[in-house]
Figure (cartoon, rainbow, N blue to C red):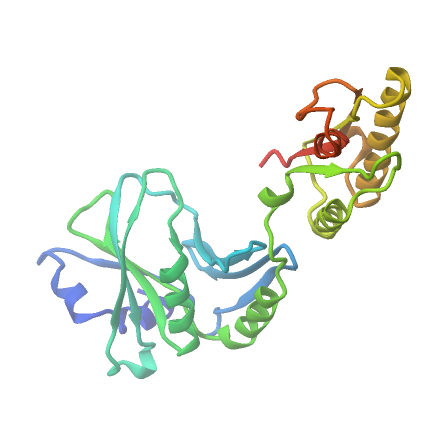
Length: 294
């Protein structure tokens, strides 16, 4: 067994070792002190990703994305995906130089066949907190092909602190809304103008702010409608102009023009009565539908 693996084997819990059959073996994965590194692979107002490599196992990362709710996900990009459903224990283990410190149970998890493992929400925050304390969150499970053997996958706290600070600073600056909050948006216009009402101007700013960092789209539909006041052809032209104005804005935000399909519907497809002021305000609208395709 290599020195890299010994550093994690020394930290294995007595309970985990005693659980092995008499003829069983423990296979361990983890970065040595010399190998352990953390890096921010994404640092924008729409997403924060903190990544760590585990030799011979793959890469793991913590991620948080723009949303109205605080969120955290820990994902495991394994070189070898699980061969079957697997029960997993996640424990906080002391590093080898603190071997006398107690370990602590974090969570009972499951790997699913051909899917990478992940830890979500509160349990992911617990992992992050244990790393901040210098502990090594470690996953224990039975070998997929030999039930007598067990596997330990350790996440090293070495060199974690500086990048943890950068990650938390990134999280604090995430936009307070997600792509889903802007992917289907209705904008409304003031009467007889090309000027959006105040709510729509705020919504349009949210879209532009988000697209500064995530402009990649598979398809964007811009559908424009008017009320029934004025001539039918004039209203159709007004709707086309409004749709094209929105297209130009989206292109300026980074979306490729050939991904944007605009349609001016004019007086068609009212969503409210055209006999009231409130109804006409609702009918004067542009609907933006965005699809990222991933």
